[in-house]
Amino acid sequence: MQKTFIKYAVMIITSAIFLILFINFLFSRRTLETQQFNTFHAKIEQVIHTLESNRMELELVRKNLDEDYLIRAKAATYVMDRQAEVVTDVSMMQYLAELLNVDELHVIDENGIIVSSSVRQYVGFDMTIHEQTKPFLDLLESGDKEAYLIQEPQPNAAEGNIMQYVGVPRRSQKGVVQVGFVPERQLEAQSRNTYDYIFSRFPTDVEEELFVVDLATGEVLGHSDNIEQKFVEDCYQMDQLLDCTEGAFKLGKDGKRMYIVSRNYGDALICAALPSRILYQKLMENTFHTFFYLLFIEAAVILLLYYLVKWKVINGIHRIIDRLSAITDGNLDTIVEVGGNREFEELSGGINAMVKSIINISDRISAIIDMSGIPLAAFEYGNENEHVFATSGIGKLLEIPTDRVTELCRNAESFDRYICWVTRKPVEGEEDVYQLNDTKYVRIHMSESQEGKLGVITDVTADIMEKMRMRYENTHDALTRLYKYRHFQQLAQDILQNMPEGKVCAVVMLDLDYFKGINDTFGHDVGDRYLQSFAAVMNTMPQEHYLTARRSGDEFCMMIYDCDDRADIVRHLEDFYTALGRNQIALSDTETRIISASAGFSWTADSSEEISVLLSHADEALYEIKKATKGTYGEY
Image (cartoon, rainbow, N blue to C red; front, side):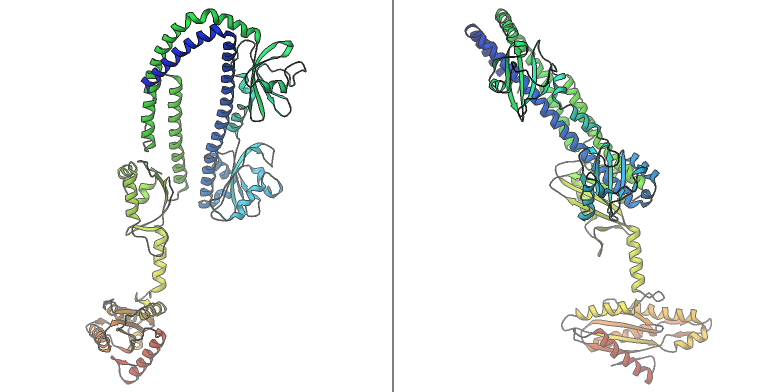
């Protein structure tokens, strides 16, 4: 790039020297007018460029602030949803507003009323009565929890102060959280985009004028010398200025002959003017001095360009590119330090400030999450970045040491593999819930886009353990730890309906013999141990063939399934009674007894039969056995 630039620079400058000398000799006046036209054209271009740059800066300021304000509004919603007491206390609302660095913080209920605010006098304000506040009511009806509204800066409804408001819907209940900011940066950026402001800081030559005229009204929108808002009739008028796009001489103020260049810019006409006397004076001076200076200037410019391009531009650009590549890859610890000129130093400082701002935002969000006391962490990584952005609590939630977290966050691919490993086996019946170990469950909610992946991790161990405990208590008998009868019926019906062709199953109703006498003689504690001992024998039966439950009192039931025929069922029953006969229970210090139980069973090979019918038949068989004998079983 350097050699090519210098080569073309030498060619252009040398050609320009000979061209200037030739034109200066033959067409000196025209040359000077052309030079002046180019000067004016460049200045007008600079004015337009400044206007466009200021406009882009204003848009960028608005965009960056809008994103920042939206993050703060969502952070406020997050805290309120998890710490409801914040909404009930003005002082806590003020503290949260100060923590989030916002000027105002409001909570709007489902009726459009401000029910809580960091500004005490705003509490009770009706959002439905003013055009400035009405748009936020649409968030109440949208039903989209990800919706938001960012208003342009404007006078607020309550006091007429210039404010910018951002609103997001609450997640825990119907309502809107609104944050407000004094838009100082936007107003400052807007003030820099006026013609008077630009002209006041724009350098002009002696008696040179820069001004802008409204194409529709002829009104002067801005002037470098602050002249009156309308030209007098003998001064250049709109139809005259429109003829100056290629440069022309017109009569200006006080009858001065002026050289004017104009250019349309939107609904305005930007003009530059210089008295012809000054122009001809320059012609005479340039004619005498141009020849003597051109050769010297050429040599000096080439040497200067060589130095500037090599040492002040090319090397600095390469260093900045290298640092930006490292930052783009996620290495936010990289510091850009490129000296040599003020622009590079400002650019380096701006990049470092931007990276620091990103880090500070992440740190502030982590601090807010830590202060909330909620076990939550977040992470983000791009498809092409090596680094992973993660909040500080991720190691504690995933139960991995700090050095391991640091190692994973340095490589997005390794982090992604680890997350895939954690999420390989979701907890059945739960959404986005995964088991880390025997005592730890987490919910990992992820969203993926073209830019990368974003995830939130929360600790749901207490919820899952409570659900498991409640599920167990709802399905198991507290004394025997066998299935409850109702749950047994559901499981048995499922087994029956899914019974393979060619297999048979049976349901067995059991009743303990002489149990009332044991209770009356030895007490209920011994009776409970008697029941538990019987249940323990039932639990020793192989689970691939037995489903066991307590019906009520001393009544039990079981299902014998996955059998080949009736003889197979009887063999399983014999196995059960054999195991029961080997089990003795001590009723007192001097007496032990083998548990005696009577049973009736009903079997089927039809998977379409109802389990309730089989249970009824087995109950009838048990009744017949109890009448005839004890301690054995019979078939329906």
